Length: 64
Image 1 (cartoon, rainbow, N blue to C red):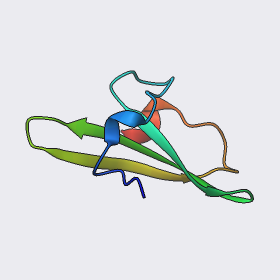
Image 2 (image 1 turned 90 degrees about the vertical axis):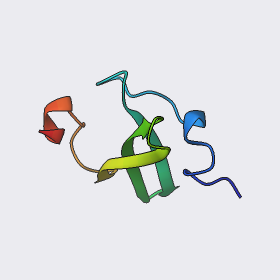
Image 3 (image 1 turned 45 degrees about the vertical axis):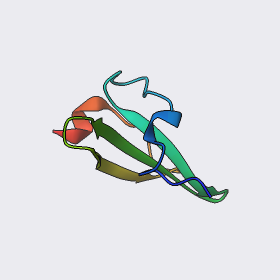
């Protein structure tokens, strides 16, 4: 089983911000989008936002 902490680089970069990545988790109708960034120097994955798939489109300003 692949886990986010084991291979975070397998996830695509977001269209909103090329420094962030996203992972789609679950199955329809219960689909979630996890927005995260890889902190290479610290050796960790920082989850910034978990969004239910049925919500409006994500914007980079949602993280501020």
